[in-house]
Image (cartoon, rainbow, N blue to C red; front, side, top):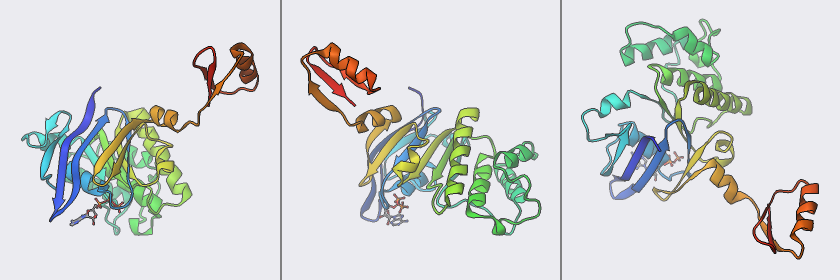
Amino acid sequence: MEYILETNSLGKKYGRSEVLKNLNMHIPKGSIYGLIGKNGAGKTTLIRVLCGLQKPNTGTYAIYGTLNKDKKISEARKRIGAIIESPSICLDMTAEDNVKEQYKVVGLPNYDGLNELLKLVRLENTDKKTARKFSLGMRQRLGLAIALVGNPDLLILDEPINGLDPEGIIEIRELILKLNKEKGITFLISSHYLDELSKIATIYGFMNESKIVKEITNEELEHDLKVRTQINVSDTKECVKYLEERGLEYKVISDEIIDIY
Ligand code: ATP
């Protein structure tokens, strides 16, 4: 499996407190990786380390195979776009000017693709309206447009639906799915809502007490969550006929045992 990003025994301390401990994470190319953990589990710290905003105390991480200690890591990091905590936008500027600023930050020679980006996040008709007058959902979408400048292959979003209303949540969700399917962008999304993440994630990393305690694909998770009842039967054929007629999901384990889901 090709990993866009992986960590090896990553550790981070703030003073004496170990916020990341022996953390191992693997983000497959093209996936939507849901990083799940309750408040204080260390999700934001992990994201800050991966984006180069904090240095790990122990362990390593690699972006496209380039280790964090390698000189080329800043080049590799250019392939990442991120929104950490809240989108970095200037509230007194229009959507267009905010995105233009990012073109300058990234060092692009012109504004090629600017209109497409604004269209993609559905902010092309906001004209002279400043971001201060935007809803939270619009600000989040503007943040996404800014993070997309420079065509990153990996987008890191820290709690992207925090504070959004149901409509805003759906908009962000659909945008993420579109970017993943149509542009092949890989996502790392942190959240403490498994329910919401389960609508988009293809793989999960469950974080607890500073570690990833389990990495599991969507299919494996669905399988694990299925309720299964095992029954002993005297006539397998007859029982299968009965289950088929009722459209039930089952698995014949042996001549005498059937699992019903
Ligand atoms: P939340 O969902 O609440 O943001 P989180 O999983 O993102 O939680 P972090 O923000 O990474 O968790 O915080 C993990 C722990 O590290 C918390 O106990 C927090 O108080 C502590 N912490 C975070 N940043 C710092 C810092 N700069 N200095 C000291 N402690 C910190």
